[in-house]
Image (tube, rainbow, N blue to C red):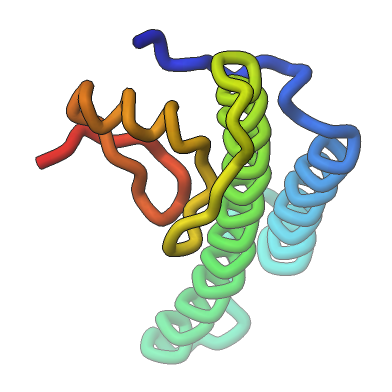
Length: 132
């Protein structure tokens, strides 16, 4: 069985707009931090005390980390939605059975049986993985 590959048409205009918004937010946050804390290209702590500098750096890192993690989660959601559409379209093309939902997983019964016979199962996120 050939695993379907994502293509540009698997992403909706809403997906693309959300992706661009996520990246803009990430870069805006990074630029804002750089402009505020590194106007001449190198970090200048606001306090001469070393321990306060460590605290300040941890706050900056936490801000960047939260924004980066939020961006990653958003991009992962976009990819998962596109993959779900791809799997649904592929299943509809290979079978005229109706989609069923079992334990929160949407799939077509014949396609699922074929995958299980081939030693593949579905994770909760819709990804096909080899059975253990």
